Figure: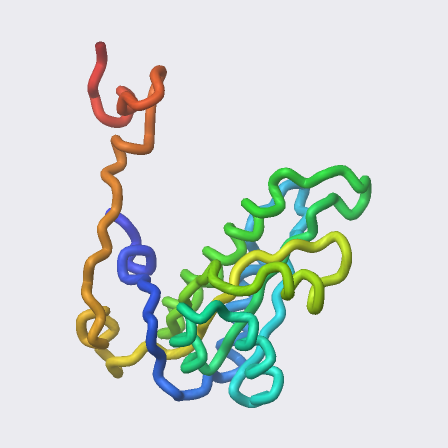
Length: 192
């Protein structure tokens, strides 16, 4: 059975205006800290703005694509980035983006455990973000809207006016055995 934190997690497009407590925000980023990474490089970095700093929040929001205007209603906006090369050797870190994804997934699950919701977005001005906010050697990751989901105690998407459509591919469509595209026999008992 899938853990409820995974099954219940969803990405709202609306948030309660309630500010996120600094302790909860710290815990979400602490979860990122514990993500696995290649050679323990921990290449992820985050810029974070909250409603407690309206000018900084507005500046970070200015990078959002027009289609993500809804994210301006979130009391927290974070922007992720990753270091492209290993700090010690200077070699290209081919796993850096994967490592960032692991850190972000830890954040999502921790947020769910704390009653918060996150929504990850690729729709922002990557080039301007890289040019104006990142040092050399870093690439943009995602923007993440954070806050309490709408709907009060009822955390179901439909309670907040969102369609509950959370379609996922069946596992046999992405876990293969000996031949690409054929379900793994060891998992699904389809021996040929």
